[in-house]
Length: 290
Image (cartoon, rainbow, N blue to C red; front, top):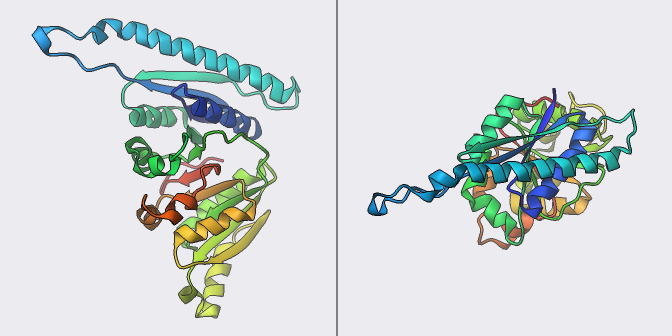
């Protein structure tokens, strides 16, 4: 069965991300698998005592299990409201994975086990962009993920997707990604906006540029549009892209220069990905099954 994996730590932003995942699941006709990774305090070497955590671990697992069961019930109630018991609408089932261990390892293993369509995670609060770029779990998650990875900013509620922007440098590898994104957009009857952020030097040979653009666009179909944004750097270009009324931004992980250039001290960097905009990362070589 098609599955969307929603990582949760029971915080308000992660619950919001789970609700976002539920809305996606209804449209994509997929089930929802909640995933929580927990850890226990390290053993204490003092006086040769065994840490209390070894004794409390069953209780900790039980508490986390209860929290997951409550979130499952919350999602099921929300699903009933969203679908209004309409028999013609897909009704996702909701289940969960609970494991002790490193969050990245637990999430990636669960995604592999469930053959997830995508992994949904939350960005949280003020300074979310800095934590996204610098936070060890987020960076490790991007590097480790073999499935599409969707970050939902705190407070971003789901609304119908109308325009999805795919930022690309028009390389051939991205054509296949664009074709998968067309399938994704089709579930929402959304437009896919192919966006190339480029500086003036790329446009000097207009004929060569048009050939490259047409080669990229030729295999694409359905509701696809194209826009180039002329900018001296990616950060500013993405800032301009935000003003195009897009509902989701998509980027491929192999665009390493993008991440390298998003330095936390830059004003343009802080504005490049507005915390209110969902960000879908497509890792190179990822399993895409939209």
